[in-house]
Every structure is written in C-alpha cells, then in structure tokens.
Length: 473
Image 1: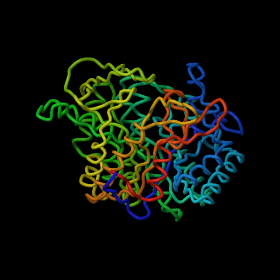
Image 2 (image 1 turned 90 degrees about the horizontal axis):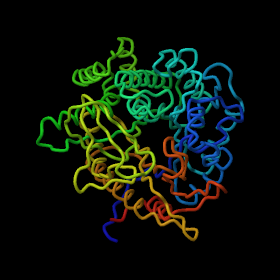
Image 3 (image 1 turned 180 degrees about the vertical axis):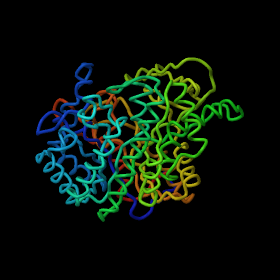
Image 4 (image 1 turned 180 degrees about the horizontal axis):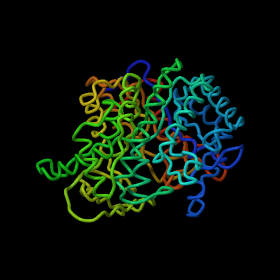
C-alpha cells in the first residue's frame, strides 16, 4: 500500500452511539416512556432491551475506545431518563448515570459529544392531544430540558441539539414506519422539521447567553440528490425537490436564518399536494435569525445518495427493513422516483454506495452556506450481515467503505472545507430502529446473548488510521 494521506492535527477519530439503541434498561432506573416502547412491543419483531447493555457495560466500551485509539464518542442523553414525564420531576438516578458516563469518558481521553434528542422524545408529548414537535409547546419544553442539561453537565464541552431532523420527518410522515406515523404527509414533515429547527435555534441561543463553555450544533442526515439523467430538465427538477426535503429546508434554517424563496416555494407546493398548509411565523424566523451567529458546528450523518427520475403517479414507498436486496421502492408525488444508476453498487438494504457524494455534499455546504464554521462527520458506516467465524469477523467491505469515504473527506479538506472529525457508525453493534439486530454496523461485534464484545477486522484497521493519522490508499 502506498501514498499515505495525512489527516490534520487534532482530527477526531470517534465512534457513535445513541441512547435508545445501546443503553437497554428502557423501563428501569426511573426512566419514562418513549413512543418506541409500545410501538416495538406491539410489532413483536424485536426488543430494544438489552440492546448493547451500554447502561451497564459502558466501562467496557470506553476501555475498547481507549485501546483502539478512538478519542471521541457520540452519545445521547435519553430525555425521559432525566425528565420521565418530559417536564417537571427530575430523575436523580438518570442524572447520576450520565455524570458517571461522562466522567469515565473524560478520564479515558475519549471525549463525549452529546446529543440531547436522538429519536426518543418522551411519550408524554404525545398524550392528551399532543403530537410531539408538531405541538408548539414541545418546543419550549425542549429548551427547558436543554438548559437543564447545559447547567448540570458542565463536564460536557461538545453539544448537539437533535439528531437527524430530516430522518425524523421521513420516518414519521413520509415513510410512516415510526411511532405515531402517517404516510405521504409532506405538510406535516416540513412542519415537524421547521418546529424542531426553531427548538434548536432557541436552545443554541440559550447555550450562548448562559455563558456555558464549549460548542453547540446540530446533526443532520444530509444526502446528495442527483438527476438520473443530468441532461434531463425534468430529472433535475425531481432532484431539486428531493433536495429541498432532505437538505435545503434544514440547511437554510441553520445558516440563512430563513428559507430562501425557492426553498419555501417548493415546500409549500409539496405541502399542498399532501393537502395541508405550513405554519411559518414571523417569530419563528426571528428565532432562526437570532441563532445564526451561534451555530458552532454542523454534524453530518452520511451513508448514501439518491438518484432521481421524473415520473407521474401516486405515492408508493416501501422501506427495506429486512436486507432483502431490491425490495425497496420510493416514488413520491410531486417529486419523482428513486432509481439506481448503472454501475453504482448498493447494500443489501438498497442503500446506494457512492462515496464521491460526500465530497460533493461538503463542497456544496462550503459554497452555498459560507457562514458555516466547522463540520464533523458524525455518522458514516456500512450495515452488513457480519459472519462470526472462529471468533473473528472479516468485514472487508466495511473497511473499503470507510476508506473510500475518508479519502473523499481528505479531498474536501484539501478543497478548503473545515472538517474536524469523523465518527464511525457505529462504535459497537447496536439495536436498529427498523431492522432490529441483523443489520450490524459496529467496529465491535456483540454476541447479544452473552453481551461479549469482539473486535472486527475494521476495528484494527480503524485503530491504525486513528493512531497514525494516516490513510493508506
């Protein structure tokens, strides 16, 4: 292997987790309910308990980070473990748990990057007529929760408000395979994203006005959209509309403080097709604008891209949650049809593998939103049906996937994009919201019956990259 490529000094090589996907203990130690609890129980397909048993095993996982050169870890606080009812009474056992977790991380030199809400808004906000963040009082509740965490967990210096607002909207109101979900409600999808961005903005302002030490930002699942035929004006329009849904709506809110005219026009059109209206108020725009100077960083979760073809017809989306390759469909009225470009590989879950798309995305952020300050790649990895043979997992496709994406990140850095870190998804094998346990992402294999951890080949490969700061071509 030749031509090593050097990462900048101080570049973070991290691993990513999320509370509900790793902690287990979902109904113990004073934790309140979240919508996923009853939703998954009713399905009966798989349980989030004990997941990776991180609540009890986190010292083992932090030790693995230290041994394998991983110097940052994404974790999230389960809102309902702090406030079981969303607001009001505090659960001291939950507060103590996170203090212990953060202390263990910091002592080991594995710096915690902490998300306040990673798909697990408390169930309390869906009761008595509430619709989660579609109900505006939830915005204020989130800000109060955030302010509590900022003041309580001062040992944390890196904060993210939300994880993947577009994915939340998609699961809730486009695909509709999440709790309290509906299909093809683009009006509600845009409204949900908007309200969550207002909550983010208010929390960011509260963080800086409170004088807390550190940085704060938001994590978004950003996905490059391409026309299947770049020479087709209709395909280009389909890609533009899909881009507004997944990328421009949240990026405009973050870095413009408002929605560009063509962004708003596209969102309004799609909302009308779904039979609804958008409620974007002057005070909302004022909140977004007030946060503009205070968005310290952007977390980019990136796995795949999408190729769009213009098409007419009714909505038809099928989510591939089983790994049955070729079973997914994506046809959205007013947008078009998702396709696979010839010669571009896909995973068993029909996710398109196109690492160059990450480079395009990063350069696009730099050029379209020049007031951004810093980017972390907060999730990137490959879901894979790992074969556990003789105590070893040879996950060469995952290594190749990571190598290609890291190479394009370095090219983006050379192109002037300020990327400060990379967090592989995921640190260890975890529970997946719609796939259960057969889609493994971890650097460390978990035998879910014994909870024993085994390093995969990718863990040893990543250790070398992290410890040397070199990527071998």
